[in-house]
Length: 291
Image (cartoon, rainbow, N blue to C red; front, side):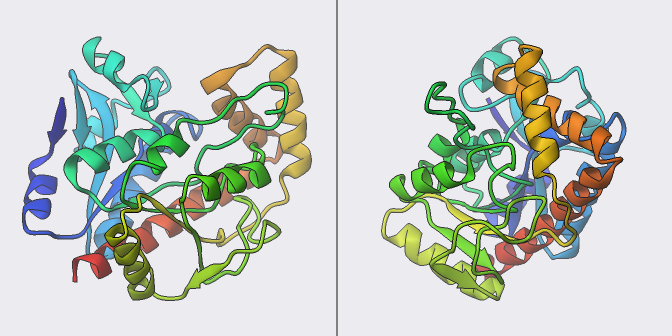
């Protein structure tokens, strides 16, 4: 069920640097056509850092780890959005499944990949007091020994509650050249962080110690290189989603589409830039871990 590309398999056999990448951003995170360009750019940035990209998605009855350019093009808006709880059904049905953060983590655990890059992780949704909606990403982070490079928690979520749950689950949140948690579209403003690194070697050292002590994932949070204050638009988009009855996995692509439209493309630029920046750092950390 887990199918590695020849390039990824060979890299892992020689303990080389590999970075897992998701496919939801390709299929659902950007307007039609742009997601594929972002996916290709992420792969190129990882290669530029000296690592092998392992883009993960469900294709042809398997969880594929390492996609060719032609395979990547099959992930469009018609692809099913899948996480840890739905991958098996997608595989069995031979559907095309675009993986969220939890999907590549499943592949990381199965294949032994130790680094992943993404935009932002899922977590505790706003309004959890009355509607306890928590992303499956957190469960996978608690099970998978991998460094996940991201720009923090997705902005449409309850960031403070997510940080508290990460601590409960024993998942370290380490700042990459920052002392506060980035707020995805905004570089600062989140809770203070207890730990910070400024080099890939420092990140690799913490990861090795964490795993030697039986720990699982580490979040390496990196401020976005460009910024936009999206909070008013996020609240507006979430209200629209509620009014239109959008629920569950459909909320994130609905809100992202609304943000891109209402910000006149500003959030699109931030999202694209931070994904590339995170892929670069992930590649550098993977190289440090393989050294």
